[in-house]
Length: 69
Image 1: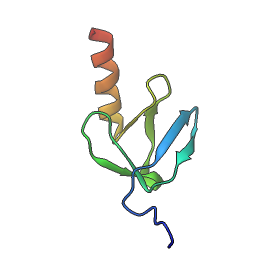
Image 2: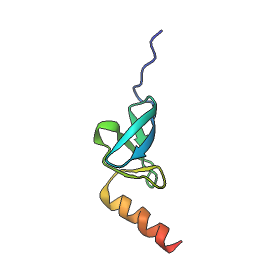
Image 3: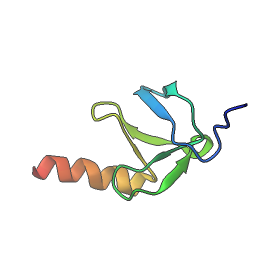
């Protein structure tokens, strides 16, 4: 029986300019909104927090929230 990575969340290690797949899948979840982000569409993440974000605006919101805390 073949295991499909379709509709399974991937586990990633976020690095500068790239990420490494630790566990196969086809998407990750935005740390702020919970939205699915296809790996082909993933552009924004935090290396320090190891989190993915759906957009630049959401990544800035997360960074500003951390500064206030």
